[in-house]
Image 1 (cartoon, rainbow, N blue to C red):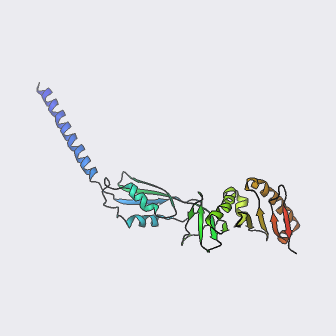
Image 2: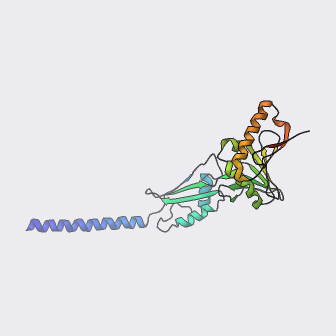
Length: 243
């Protein structure tokens, strides 16, 4: 009987002790504060518009983080602070088990640079076709589109979209001129000719014709003999020489 009473008493004490321990742990966790801040910026294709230190400073201008209560901290508000950096794409924030606030950031990627022929201003165009301000710290090596306004630049941007994953044509296209009618002229990195592009729905055929033409001219050694090449005629390459 005494043994049974002792066992019951032991269990009761164990339950009380466990409850106190859980209560203490809960109280400690509810009062937990961040001990550090860890920022990681994912590099994409050598793009360096955003670095970890600039993200860190954007956060620390609003909150010191270290010592901030975890349970009261707004991760959504923190995302908003980071999103104010123009070149930031996606943000993922979460508290680690070691009470470190972890921030993972991805960057927007520019595909082209638009130069306004009216105002002289310039900006990048990212993979979604949206404008992206220039950076004072980094210059992306992308084709330049010369157009009077951003809407006109979209005609040239479509050409960039269709060719940027092809190593030959992405290396070939240096600049694109867009006239008021939306017609495109390619300024290549090799040769002196301006190349008129026709219907972009037939772009693959036009580029196939162009590369055949270039190979023939390179073989003859007169690549710089032409000032204008027109791909807009179906199945043809019409070239005008310098006289």
